[in-house]
Image 1 (cartoon, helix red, strand yellow):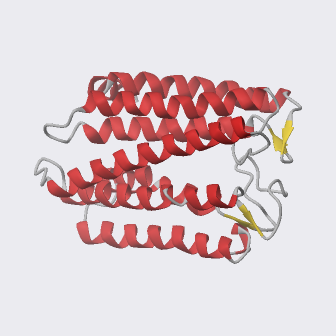
Image 2: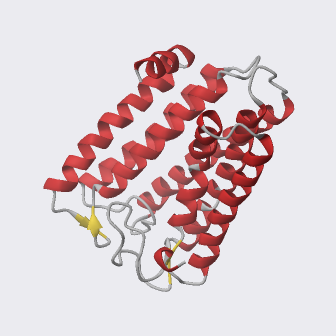
Length: 254
C-alpha cells in the first residue's frame, strides 16, 4: 500500500494531497454524522459532504494515476482545475451542511440558486476536461500498457462521462427522487430511496466505472475481449438502474 501512495505522489503531487485532504474531511464528516442532529430533507446534514468527499477522493487519485500515462499532457493545469472546481464543490456543501441549509436544489433565495448553479458548472467543467482526457486515451496507442488495462481506462472514462452528465437530469428536476419527495427512507449511508425511483443510483454506478473497470483489468481481467464484455455489462447495469429510477421504482427491487 505504501508503494501505491509513494507512486501516486510521484505521479501527481497536487492531486495526491488534494485527495488526502478529502480523505481527512470524509473522516470528519463521518464523525459528525454520529454526533450531529442537524437534518436536511430527512437525512443527517453531514451525509452528503461525506459522500462527496469520498467521491472526489476517488476521482482525484484515479485521474492522477491515469494521466501519468499520457504523453505531452499538461497535467498541472488539469490538476489545479480539479482542485479549484471540486474544492469549491466540497467546501460549499460542507458550509451549507454546517448551517443547516441545502446545497443542492436550493432555490429558496436567488443567491443560493446561483451558488448551486456554480456548483453544477464546476462539475460540468470537470466532466468535460475528463472527456477530453478520454479522447486522448483513444487517440494514443500507449504500447507500454496492457491492452485490456488500456481499454478499461477508455471505457471507464466513457461511462463516467455519460453518467456524470446524468447529474444535469437531477439539476433540471431540482430533485433526485422520482415518484415521491427527496428524503424518503433509504439504504444505510448512501440513502438511496427504498420506496421511490432514485436517480443517484445510476449516477453513482456510472461514475465509479472510472475506478471499478481499471481495477478489475489491472488485477484480474487480462483479456481484452473479456474487459469489453465486463464494461458493456457494467454500462448496462448503470443504464438499467437509470431506467428503473425514471419509472419511479427503487433500486433494491430491480
